[in-house]
Image (cartoon, rainbow, N blue to C red; front, side, top):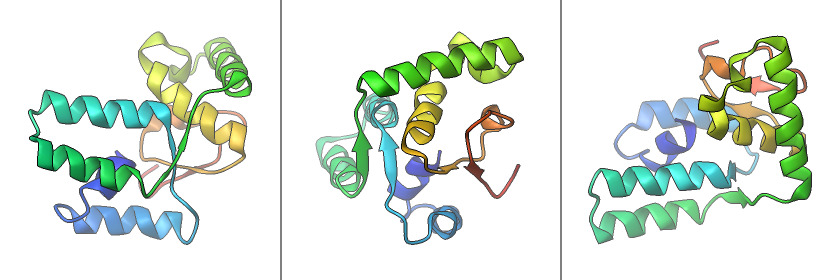
Amino acid sequence: MVVSALVNAARQPNVAATYLSLIGSRPVVVSFVTVTELRFGALKAGWGELRRRGLERDLNRFVIVQPDDGLMRVCAELRSTCELAGLGLGQKIHEADRWIAATAIRLGIALVSDDVVFRDVAGLTVLTQRM
């Protein structure tokens, strides 16, 4: 939702401004899975070539984190920990969210999100306007 709001800032300037205020001067770091979801969403919505090129231009402004062995380890540990604690992030349906959270944990950075699935996850700092 956050990256989508930033990509669509011209359409939703107030939403983008809210998230930008949380991000501050820090670089926008994005998980590979977020990029996958954005590209899929564009294809599913039938975006034309011009609009998809705009998406790629927007994505080039962000730091995109690819998976490596360390991230895969953190993601597996996160699933196990969350599953044992009975947290939603441990469920299969939250696979993409878990990659996003694991990316933030691995890099030691805050996650900007309004999604409650990230609430109460050990080792994860969440910046939000809603929770």
